[in-house]
Image (cartoon, rainbow, N blue to C red; front, top):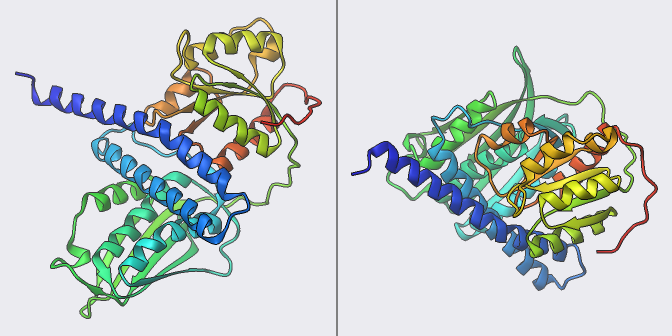
Length: 366
């Protein structure tokens, strides 16, 4: 009879496998929907595309929540910090949640403090997950009223704090007051907030009005980057033909030149004979996986080729993966489904830090 620990380990492995399996087709769904959303569409067509994107995002949040639940006591559960526009991130989140709020008779609004600025530095994915969880929970608890989300940044002893406050005057249609409920999603959200140096609280008044607050520590860049973007020459190592086509379409739309290979061995050979600004490397490929390929690239005698920035691209979102890809010599870590904005930022960051010489490029159509 397998021990309880063995059964738990197998359950975690099954969940991680399911996550990787689902993220691969979700990459195609969200990627193609994003590209379609940027074309000229009729109003009803645009509504359908955005509904696909919202539903796909909800599947991703559910996957992340379930993975985080099994890793709540695992020290490997961590955060990945980056700079991004907070106003844009929250606006996108509100639009994803608006249909669910409307179905519950709730109007959803978002307000920003005048001095909130344009960019902050923290874990964008974890912040979005926490905001989504907290707001979705309140939507599921209340109906027929107004849900107001407000964002501001305060200064304190330990640095700057981003405060997301969600208030409602709607009526609860559950027997348990919101502040007394310990749902699994709220448990995940509280842990995520603590990982980012903050906390989550929910307070319910006598009239059943409710105030939920999420706070996390952040950094604010002193100055906005004025880097001029230029096209890059990128090697894409990806064995899935569907993902090859999608990544090619995205890179072409971003104005970058690219070449495709189907496994790590081909990637190593390509780096030996050609110069690239970056290698976008899938981790799970036949013949040679991405980590081994990166280690072989780092061991090349050609110093310029050996120093090419290598960015991991994977559906494997286990907590230990960021550390593992760095140990393998990679420079960054992107997860599937591919976030187009994050990909673009990563490309520019790699180009800015690359020790290779700028290349004269000709834009290639996808």
